[in-house]
Image 1 (cartoon, rainbow, N blue to C red):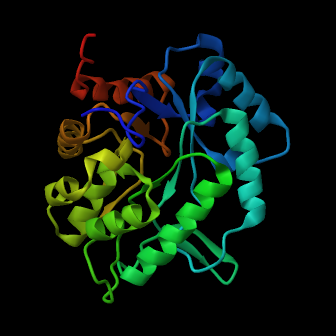
Image 2: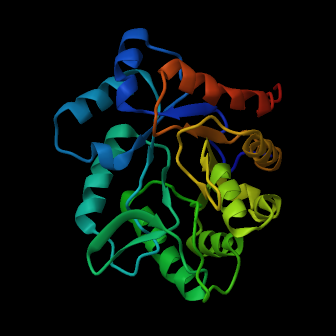
Image 3: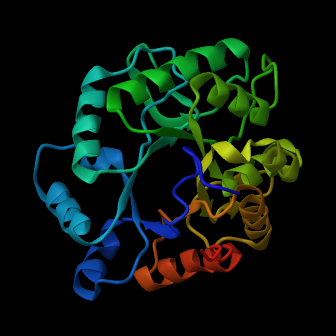
Length: 280
């Protein structure tokens, strides 16, 4: 799979999320890490320790920004103050792309602080795509959208989740952050074949992959990011790499966070699925 404007970051390898419990280890041991993903909202401040830490990281490592509050699918207008702060951070980090979730989470100026699933309608796709284009044009950096895990569905949906994802990214002309764990979680919660979802995603638009662990309950699976990656998710990841090529990959581990070595070791398991680059 040749590189293109969406999956051209084939040299990024495998990254991990930058988390507070690991700061001391990172600064004292200086581990070799391909890149760190930061949650943008944690660093959209005017000064203080967060930016001091970020600047130390930037001296040694590549950083990619990941957002959790853009809510592309909400009917509310974009928050211009949020975008201005985000653009300042984008310029500080030099992030090669910016990701956020294909979801909604606000109404009439009130925020749920959750990643709520979309109704899969053509009207929702149209509104969402327009907002993605506005964000991309304002921030002047490629924007990619992530499929979320879900636990409820709308009866008014006019298409499947993967058809909706494709409709949005085609209308917005943007890339995809494909979370294979979220595909697996939603497939178990809504009884669909995760392979069908993965095979329907246009590989040329996949710019990044997420892998993670989850928690299994009696009637549903919850995307908790607090366990190692299970074998069925690794199988989906392998299938994604076969279809999309050596896409930049990020391991998420956000609760019950173990040592940095354990997280990094789990992340580097992805390397065995990556193919060696062709020789010149």
